[in-house]
Image (tube, rainbow, N blue to C red):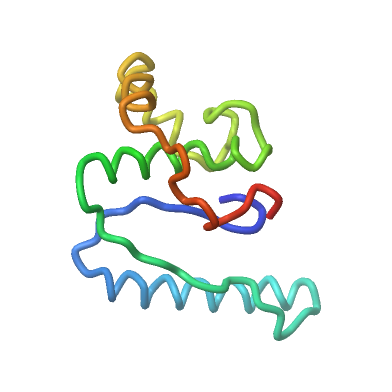
Length: 120
């Protein structure tokens, strides 16, 4: 989770149910945070977007995008430096060389352009 947004790549058998539960989670946490900050009515979460993976290429590019996002925003220099990332576990399970191959075989290039500008 970045300070102002997050990305998650999940597999869900019931995407509508997941989005409903995510909406409830966002509602409860925004209510609590707004109470802590005395800022009732402030928008904390704006939306959740779901996208089915269309191919193996789409999946791996998305995984690279999610892991690279904290680097892209300048919060850390390496994937593994971001404490809320799954990158450490991914690298342990996959191995650094295999992860490098995935990075080069499925580059993010302009993937996600306009989703969350680095200045956010």
